[in-house]
Image (cartoon, rainbow, N blue to C red; front, side, top):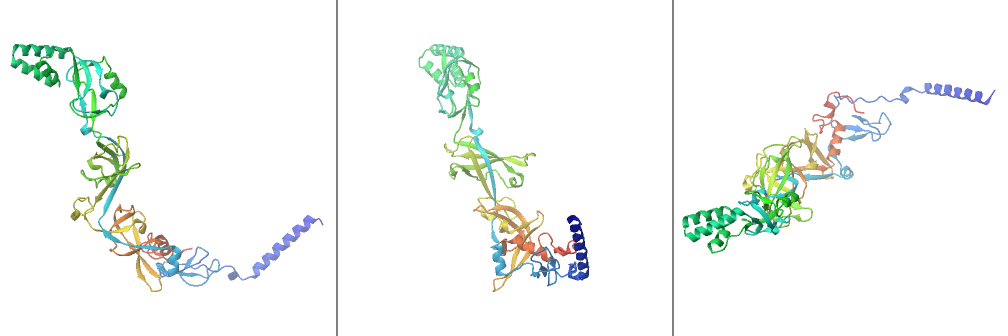
Amino acid sequence: MTPAAKGWIAAGAGLVLGAATVAAIPADRFFVPVEDVSADAPTGDRYACPMMDFIGHKPGLCPVCGMTMERVVAGDLAREQQRRMGLRTVRAATGPAIVSVRAYGAAEYDERFSQVVIPRIGGRIVKRHEATFGCCQEVSAGDPIIDLYSPEAYQAQAELAAAVKAGDQTLVAAIEARFARWNLSPVAARIRAGGEPVDTVTITSPVGGQAYLDDQAMVNQALMVGSEVKPDMPLLKLVDGTRLTLVFHVPEPRVHALRTGQRVRLASDDLGDLPDVTAVVGRVSNEINPEIRSREVTIHLTGANGRILPGSLLNARIEIPLGPDLMAADAQAPSTWGTFVLVPKTAVLSTGVRHVAWRVKARKPDGSASFEPVPLALGPRIEDADGKDLFVVRAGLNPGDELAEQGAFLIDSQAQLAGTPSLLFPDGALAAPGAGHAH
């Protein structure tokens, strides 16, 4: 007989012997009936296998692996359990609810204070002065902008000189009024003083400000020497460098608390907080942008004084106290503010629809503690002075209640294992439809 044949015979004999041995052992030595945790079983007292995913309601050995089952009581934690869980508690506070609205935006010139230098008489440019050669040139009232060759102005000067010589005061007054409309009263005064008519007049700025050129190429072409200037054609835009605006978008849920005139705190990445810059909400758009679900808000700034430049990125923070009706109150009148129960966001478990906190029900001398779930009715989420997120609690808690903050999720998980009320199962896991066993 070949070695291969002998191997096959040995393998077959081994299988037959093994089957006979298994058949001779009682079945209950291999299979322990799995305990059925029915909906009728009492809740709050469960036994869990430390090795397998099995929950029962009787003490004894795990029917899966044979290890001793450990008792699980929802919400009851010994001192050592609290230490292992890293449990940390916090007390519900009471106080005003200050909603913080944060946004980023770029500073721009406040167009409410911008003005345009406009010549009231036509002609051709023969000279450009400093204000026309670049952005941000400081211009004072009376500073020259351009020299203009103007036959019309020359003719009016000649007429004024003749009227003065003839002593016709009515005509003199009429011609001087014409020079005043052109903003050329100094020219008329020179003729009255005996000066000779000239064909070139200087267009000056009637107001002060900072030169602003929207389009450098376009302005340079319009103000080029030899270019024709028509009456009432804008020459130069002047802005107030100390008055800026900040435009940003506020998400829809937050914008309802904004009101015109509210104070705004500003900060920038390079300068930090800017308490010396006065900033107030100037305009809140009446429309919601459907694409980004936000409303445009304009903030007016004063006192920038060169610290904030147009184009600077700024962080705006608006702190809005809420009244008892959870609507915006007057920030300058604390008597209009509401008082609420406040808890850290980390102490609240939420499904988005249902909210629960685990409150300390009792503490024992040995350091153990008993917790109970408390359903909450929440108001808006706010931010405290340290940047910590808080929830306004409309119902469910009292000031001073001690709550599980770190470790609350583990306590809730324990309650689910024990079948008692928890975040997901208000009436207990075993009361949920279809709950028949847990393993």
